[in-house]
Amino acid sequence: MPHDTTLIGTVVAGLGVAFLMGALAHRLRISPIAGYLLAGILVGPFTPGFVADTGLAMQLAEIGVILLMFGVGLHFSLKDLLSVRKIAVPGAVLQIAVATALGLMLGLWLGWSIEGSAVFGLALSVASTVVLLRALQARDMVETEKGRIAVGWLIVEDLVMVLALVLLPAMFGDRGDEANGAGMLQSAGIVLVKVVGFVAFMFLIARRVLPWVLHWVAHSGSRELFRLAVLAIALGVAFGAAVIFDVSFALGAFFAGMILGETQLSRRAAEETLPLRDAFAVLFFVSVGMLFDPKVLIEQPGPVLATVAIIVFGKSIAAYALVRAFGHPNQTALTVSVSLAQIGEFSFILAGLGVGLEVLPETGRDLILAGALLSILFNPIFFTLMVKRIRADEPPEPEATDAADVPAPCNAGVVLIGYGRVGSHIGSLICGRGEGLTVIEDQKDMAAAAAAAGATVIVGDATKDSVLRQAGIEDASTLLIAIPEGVEAGAVVRKARAINPKLVIVARAHSDEEVADLVRRGADHVVMAERETAARMAERAMLTLA
Image (cartoon, rainbow, N blue to C red):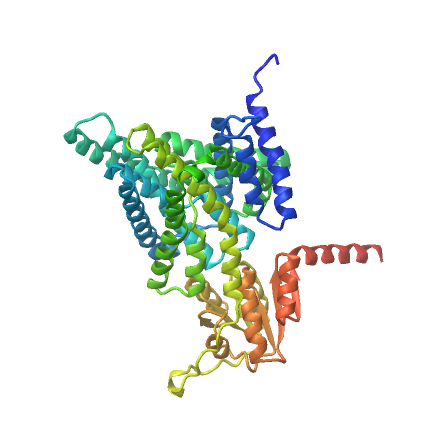
């Protein structure tokens, strides 16, 4: 050919083979992620046939990470981030320490140096941004308390990895011991200054400039220009954050999304980036498969199994124990632990840096890649098992024997579960008409907003019988379930129906599967946004034609 087509060939091969393998995985009723990973192996350098450019594939995958984190930032406010800091910061740091220690012991057992073993353990401690967010988004869990904790945990892990990537060259570069110590302190100070500078820039300058730019473009009336502005902001801020402030692309994109998430155009911006987000996320999984050499499974089965065990079980058990230790319910602990039971992009970067500094042996990099591929492959299965575990019938809670310890039930005809974006609108409509309303909400800030609107508020977990009874569910006429998470909604429906068989239950859903599940569990009416929008638009059209 007269010109270089490496980029085109990589994109075509990656997406084309991913489509075929993803369709096959769908046909076999397994996660499409398995098909995308297999596609990467097929077009990678370790299998015969066409070989795509691994370097280009990794850069394309990085765009997917940027767009995905930008989308999450659009739905994740600063208030959400600060609300989980008490669990996300100490939890992430302690979990990283546990996983690093386990990896260190495995490395020493394999005969590596203590430095290489420590780098190996550190690479096993950080979860993949793409895998975690895809799993949460697929189950509408990003905006739940569990999702906020998992995402906040991920942000802390990213910050720790940014620090590690800067300190490793200072520690193991071509310097003497004294220079290494001085270099470490100097590098740590520089990283701290840059991170603080980046956060200050985003909240003092970008917070004013970026929304103004987006509003100006929106008023131009050009959809094409609006889409271009959103992509330019997401990619531009991410690139600038990495080049100027030395933070990760993902972190920069997340903050850009969080800034724009405070505007009224956040939903439109999320919709405009969705197609590209999905396409480049697929390329991420393909790029992971391209790095994997299947021979390591045959040559080193024992170390591979040990590596996967640390990622899937060691790290998850530590996360579960930490979340429970901080007083969060079993459902939250399960969600966070399963979300973190995989590794990804930062692990590859750390492994490459460790090998480049001649600290980590190449065998360690192969084990990290094998652990990443297998843990990503197993993660959807673990999520499915987790959902089934949460949906399983729980034993009835013991009745309180001391009547003085049981709060008096509320006397309200309507009980509302959740006071988020949907619930707050419902609450304002009901309370605005002077009707009695009892709200069950587990987030203190949202509970305070419900109380300010005039509702009677119960702060607690709506999946518990005692909380439902305290809200007066036995005598209520209507139950409105406005929480976005289908698993919890199903549990609430089942328990509320058991307590009050005559109760009229209205719930929300995001898919036909959730509608069917909620109806099966006892919901009288299930509202799906797309259907309701279509019905209202058709109704308006009929009125004009009448």
